[in-house]
Length: 461
Image 1 (spheres, rainbow, N blue to C red):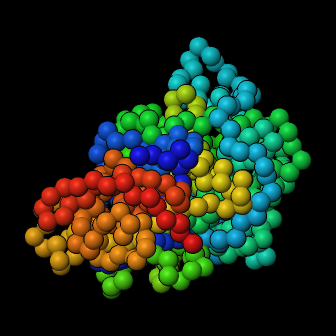
Image 2: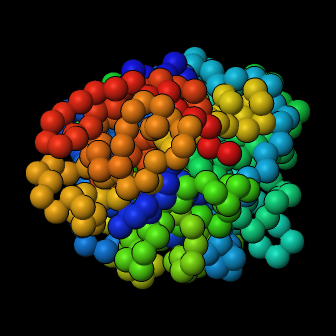
């Protein structure tokens, strides 16, 4: 079952080779066990629906995943301090919820006779895309954002507004598509989903984006990315949905206050490879942030081959109707500071809008908690004879969602809300995508037999 409002993916410890299923998103580096998921699977619910689907784990070569924000920070892609998903504190300033109806665009089409599909998408959506400039006491950088309401609420990445968790009280300005430089205030940010909301001060009648249902996406659908890579505002690239149900793990510079919450990082020495987030800094430099000793968080994402580069973080991934289907968050790279290699990732619009609405309404976002530690089946010695892949339960929390649903140590979780679960990261990402209290169908294998049960998720604190 899919919750009416998408929620931040969360899970209980997924120890794995015993890694807890909980972890905070970080901008600098991203580890991913993402693997292509079943091509036909959808990616989460509508703006107020469920999270994106888990990606089928397929072990891939080590790549670095870069945040696509543009910050002068040593962390991510480039600068001096790093701008990644971090910081827990969120303020509540805006009151408007995420809207679903776009306002008129003002982009000029010079040669309508030769206009393409991408041209029409840009004409419709570009006025709602902004460049975000963030400065702290010792660092600064730029990223992208998407206007979601006429009174100036903007969705972006948490790692953009916090400079990778380095700045708790940043100065934020936005540059609009029509060239206005406006001040903005951080409404709130959520490191678990890497989503933030800012509010453009003293404005009205702003053009805003129409939000699509990301659960209706298909592999092969057209995509258009708009943002400010390398500080170049209004840059447009296009491609397709390369895969749905991906799950990636990114290093986080901020953790939940509760030390008992789960972490995606394995409890043994076989830590997962982390993707590096690439950010664009004020000095135009890029650089991968060291993820050593950083906690991680799992994200369910859409994969696209539309070129995404440092500075695109927080920008829009659009469908052929000019509607928002994702918030660009990270890219894979083979090393160094090169840009896109055709493997980019975006947070599904259903998850982004659910989190944004919760931030606007309460100042924070909730996250589901399974109450179990899990491991990849291939890393759990107790599953040496298993004939299916999935997330092997290696620990159960008393009174938690898993225990209440009757799950036991040794069970192998193979599906969550109809989506395939092939490893611990898939499960973590999907659980976090839901809000606390959501009731979700879960499938598992016990002693070689398959079962299904509805799980009411707890709350990640």
